[in-house]
Length: 554
Image (tube, rainbow, N blue to C red; front, side, top):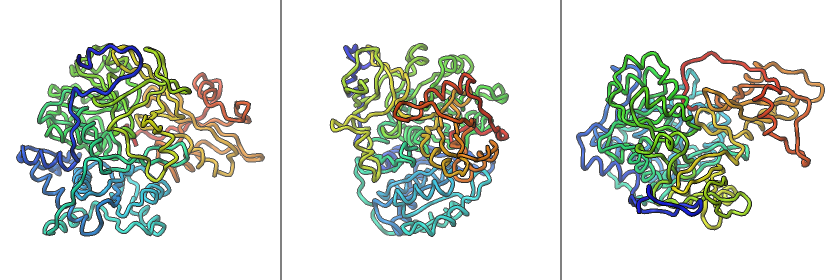
């Protein structure tokens, strides 16, 4: 019996072996492709200036990645953590592969981070090196590095991508053997927003990233030599693993777009005859609504993958109607090396629009009672728990948080609520974690709240998510003022927030109250605040920054 024909008696999906899980590293994927299709174009740097675009064959890709690995090994040791703080580029991808071949561990940092956020990630991960862009969205990153570096004695090197050609050349004539790397060795510390006030670094291994990405590509219908046009950020697991490594596993062409701009994506899909792309719902809407869409030949597009936030049924149907391509809905989280469930391109329109599909191969998934841990009956909602080779190794240097997420039976508790039908199709019904998903990016309020409490006028604050047609959710800060404090303006609070936090963590709505609704134990009833904000019972002011056309996750 195949997985598509399986009939379940309870909300438990036993691991299946319909598709093999390979014992491979990230470097193995690149070496195999270079050995079998050395002259096939592997990588395109699709910058906005078309005259400045570059491309690499698989043979050239492996050669540059090997130079990067040797340059790294002349300075650092296998197992060291190497951070990248930069927007999308082909050089980012080559460095990622170099880190893999050198047996080192990548720390992917959001280029929207400010000094406080970057310093935490570098310090907590123990990064010995940082590669960074000079600037990002008119923000000077070099100034930030200069500011925080004296507080990071373990950071041995800081190299800008302007210096990348010289760095790469330094590994050209180095005579040394690359280290042996095992499939279960760590390859990445991927930071996720944390409920403890700072992000948690999920330690991920080669086997998990390589196989999960390949299986996603296959379920999305990518054939050998497919073309993936990607604008998902490389620091995000969607860009840095699901799309890039999935394309690599299919020996395809990975067209990397520096940032999501609808007109650039449309041009790039047409120019390179893109077959696949991954777009969170806000991106997909922007693509469908852009006036350039009707001017472009998008007939090569076979599958649009979407996920990271709720994908409305109407959007799935509209995509199929307008673009004439298939859709594949993804669901997962960083701690599981990305995707754990996915719809097939052959699934019915109803399953595509109402579920996130069936689990990927070799994963056990159960819908568990949140209190007892017992498997729920078919159709009953509970916590989604996973077990298998895709489990993260641990949270870096956070044993208590690891134990709270992975139980003694090795079930990883996702913190999401869902239900499962008798076929194993999963429907997401809510979240246990106090998490906000804005534009496909997970945001936890605790870090934001702790920072806002440093403002002299703020006595207490609760940050919640409220529904938003474009972003899925927007951040709202409900503030109780300190005794005797004058009410600050929304602009003042926004400026204060942006001084130390990324734009996507800065609340959009601001409300000021005298008292919070609380439980008998004094905990703020955030669900009530969300309801009051959504219905207008609790007033909120907003500051709308000028639109700049960018809608990708920050």
